[in-house]
Length: 450
Image: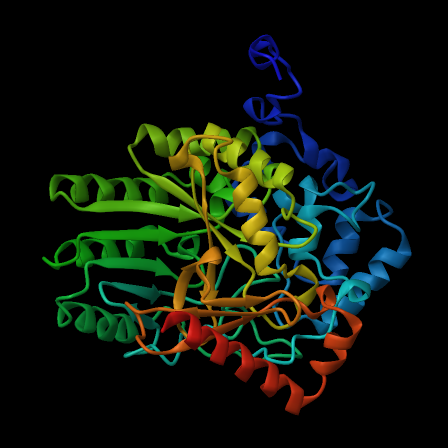
């Protein structure tokens, strides 16, 4: 490619600089007469969220064939995660090809695409409950803790790591309760106050979007008052799935901004971590919402989940990184998909993550290039995807260590069975051979780390 080519403007090449601002929701028959003034209200979004097959059919009507509706009904019944999708997201789906649409894949399960769970899957694969000194607080890293403030979200992602607790009970899973509770929060704050090595708190759940403004203030003021807490972030997928809340809910935004301002005066960092997975999730509303936060000096970082058929090509990942960077959301992490019940069709291999990071590195500024990580099953925490002690693409087993988190332990991650040879797929159905493959991988990892 010549310098002239590099410098020649190409409208299509810079598509991320012009996020869509059309009235895209009017393509949905049930909402064709909804004016912008209504659609932009977050309360309208909440009221009209799709939570069951009947509501989906009422909205899309004849947009999709009956075979798709039947497929979704069957997938809905089998899903371990409750289904909830905002009208904003539903309208962004390409209904001319919903089967392959990256947004549909993340939120509306189709029975025809579901695959058997990996044999080594457990409901709480990251052992967040095992590392919880008090209910709803995971303390795994020496100076950081995860505060699960509540158990509801404005949408429910199929791939949610916390499907063991988030959302309503389903036919497949009875959830652990981490509801917003003054008594439970008091126990969390007491532990944080009494643990001076803690400096960094993630407020998640559930989703911080669902915290009331006064709860944002309560949590923020309490954490700012603890001398050894230097950083905390409110985690929300909201910017990606319901940006109109930032535009419309001034009380919530003002509460965040006030806490962030006070934090700066105390020389403490308060920011937001959000969750875009595909460039199609970025619209003019996203740009407007981020503009509000940016003008108020609120830093926003992004954490993406790597998903098969969604963003597992370097073109899709680069386009998303550029799209969110352009609206001042900083790419931070890309997670290799956790072992989550009912989502084997979305998982990818460690090899694919390593390959994608190689392609992405150097395509844009380093601070806008995300780190690809494996959140090691069993509580090892986040490890660079390529930092395994041993990896066998033939068996799909990678082995990681976490010296700063749990020294001396070995943590195994497993590629999706679909990507393995027929012979190895058969071995994974045999408990004895499963253990032999795992033991062999761990022994080779131990030799590599000696």
